[in-house]
Amino acid sequence: MPLKKFLLTACLVALPSFASSATLSELKVDGGWSEFRFMVGLEDGEWLDTSDLQPGQMPGVLRFKFTLAKRAVLQVTDGWLLGDRFQVYSDGILLGETSTPSATAGLTDQQIEALGDIRDDWSSAFDNERWSSGSWLLDVGEHTITGFVTEMPTEPGRGAVRLISPVPLPASSILMLSAFGAWFGFSRRRNRKAGAVV
Image (cartoon, rainbow, N blue to C red):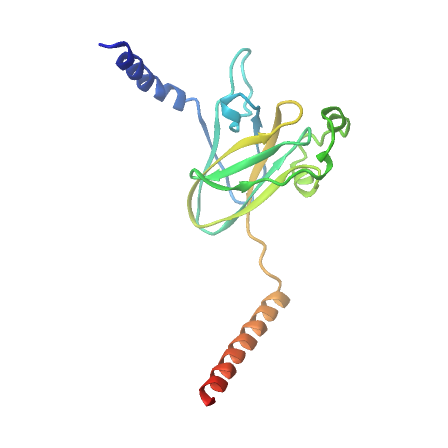
């Protein structure tokens, strides 16, 4: 067997062992935050499992899988040391990138580190513009969420993800939208009649 063909076969046989190192974690709507680790250069910057590791053991890639019976909002936030950003995917399709942390623009690594960290208070990090975060409305159906760290100015870090129920529009907003719709419909009808007379 030629060497090229042998190497290709060996790579294909080895693929399942790499795939098995991925961890699937289930998210529940309104079930709280689930953590992940990340490090540029490790697993191409993919989110990694935060389970306790034995000495010398490498963390596996972490994927969040769930099925939605109703639409839900996916929220992602950085935590601990600030300055990290992520690309977030659903079923391999890019949802978007988390926000640019406001406090890090133009700062050196030492200045960023001096600002401190928020540890694992994920809700506070999500609400604080110093930490990168993002929200996406997901449709009904099955989803597999993956992510990659795209900016990491200091040390390897941690982030978190959660699913929450969408916040319903206040009654006043619904009334305003209804009134706007009625006005728009009335205007179109009036313009049509005016055009027909001419």
